[in-house]
Image 1 (cartoon, helix red, strand yellow):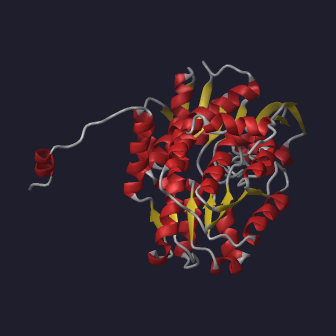
Image 2 (tube, one colour; image 1 turned 135 degrees about the horizontal axis):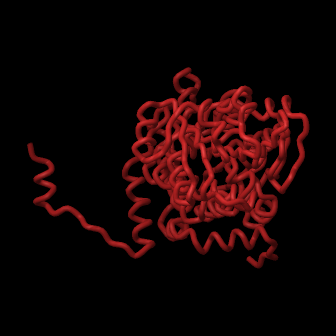
Image 3 (cartoon, helix red, strand yellow; image 1 turned 45 degrees about the vertical axis):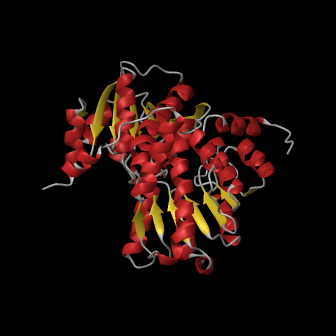
Length: 403
């Protein structure tokens, strides 16, 4: 097919040359023929290539975004030329965002690939007729898995779910190295400021927080961490970071990055005590960690001082928010590195194939990611890099299996 190329096509072409796992899967004997796949995901070049991969495997594919500001319009437009149905655009409107989710459910998908669980939650609450055809869900994120486990615990979940986020090849690489690099990429490109020598506070020390802290340290920042989990707090301390209560650390910070998955990480009292000129960025899925409604209410003035950077004047101080408090690496940048998402989307593709093959014998629960598929993606990654590793001998297996 000859496609007239715009910037969206060029972005997709670029990532296609660096997503060796998806390219390998396209060459393998896999099929999603006869299945309709509804996708709600950050719609940019890498996710577009995932949709193209599913299309090449035989699926009908319908795509929308999973966050109001993370869709790249040129990519969404270009994706239509590959036979994928797209209902998405970059928007500030929650109402418009949810209308696109409803558009995807109108197609009554057999499988859902979700990121944050909005599409799946909507199917269970407002669009229950969709459940008659829905056979399974593959969920990408920590936040989404939590929400779907809550559905299960309340007896509401009506289809099997695979927690792709819980695959080792996902959280150890996507959450840590992907979020770590892409968060700082966004902060640096949008501010053009130096990180070295600054006090940086990371709220949350899960896998995402670890990655953000690690990269901040590598850039020369003095890193502080706030946590509610005592084990993670000890880990942050042992990793060499200053640990304490957010009320005590936030006033010291030049940059604050939230990565917790919970709301109101910075309350009104904390916000009023922040340093003049502090940068605020959120790396959690939803725009609730930095309470934007509080900033709107207490600020005397607000204006965009740079693209994607809004200045709020509070009690004579300038507080700068990147990406409107939404997921900073996607609302104000290009998301995770290509090779990282290649791993995650290989996991997603194998998850959908597993659901398509096994849904009839699966229960309506949230499943951990199958270990054999996790290891298969790791093997594919090593093979794509030309790396061979050792295997156990028969004697070693016998030893390990002994008493």
